Picture (tube, rainbow, N blue to C red):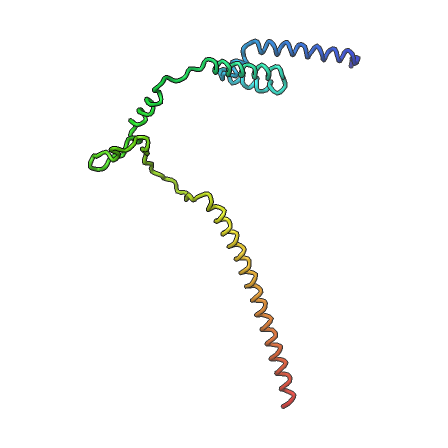
Amino acid sequence: MSCIPVGGLLRACLLIIRKTRVKIQEYIASGIIESYALGLASEEDVAQIERLLPFHPPLREALSDFEFQLELFALEHSVPPPPGAREKILDRLREVPAVRRVYRQDGQDDQKGKDRSSEYIPIEHSSTHIKVHKYWRPAFIAVFILSKILLALAIYYFVQNQHAQKEVQQLQEKLIKASGSTTEPGK
């Protein structure tokens, strides 16, 4: 085994770090970061980047810089929707059978003369859950807890009553024995 002096070990570590920095810079310059951020990288590249990100701060910085630049580009070049697009979308939605106005059985429009903004869509609700107002929940919890307390008290007093009845029965038996023993000698 060869001994490496401490100064030589330090130089070797610095050399490895410099080489790694150069490799990371080459890796960043290859465009893999951009592919990863845009979701265009292959599964292997994604796995490799996700494995390297925690250990290489320059890689994390390059990724966050690209994401920031991409967001700035999107904000600067955003195009507002054309006027009237909302109305066109809403008109298309009204053409869908489930969104059309409700008509009476005789074919008459149920909504004549009414404001179109107050239209509603009838929806069939198929949930099996019971819905209650949010303020009822604490009331239900309080009733549940109170019922458990009353149940515990009922059981406690039932056991106490049974115990008291046994004591009364034992005392009656002692009394009967005591009264029976006092009447026998007097015969």
